[in-house]
Image (cartoon, rainbow, N blue to C red; front, side):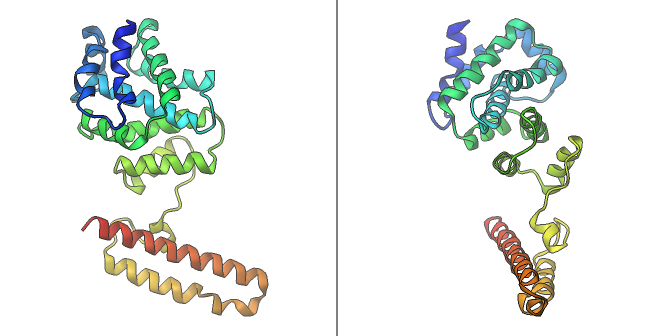
Length: 242
């Protein structure tokens, strides 16, 4: 079993995941396990890459608070044990993935790309939900952890609405997004966004509240900066998608 695991972990040592991952991980998933995964998650292109990437991403999220703790390791295993019916022996591979990921701390971006390729972009919300699950196993979400979850959502090409659906499952408040800050839906046109931005600039310009005192003036400046940053982010997204 050790040589199989070693081969499977080769893609983590190789930097951005290249051709080496293709053949290596096919040997990780036995035919029996393949049947289990197919039954629960139809439509996967590469089951070995899929399950490995899930374990790597969950480990990466847990590592944001330091070394992966036993209860976080258990939270990572729960999905494989309960949802995919992994046996105790099969779970030992997940332990190896967790350990190897902690040693190498691979970049999240290529891991997510390989995940999306392996599942044909069918299970993107699932990965974000599992990331939240392991993050919440450590307690309340810190700013650093939430920032990484937001980045994961973006790498998975999930909309703000899809992200909020995941948060709702864990009884978390809706995200504050550039769209909600400007008071427009996520499918708003460029013209609608510009109109909303101009209206909010007029409404919240610091000059309009300066006479109310220092505290109100500071709040107005902070709100104004928030509005400008929201518009800047949406404009940047629009230009990058052209």
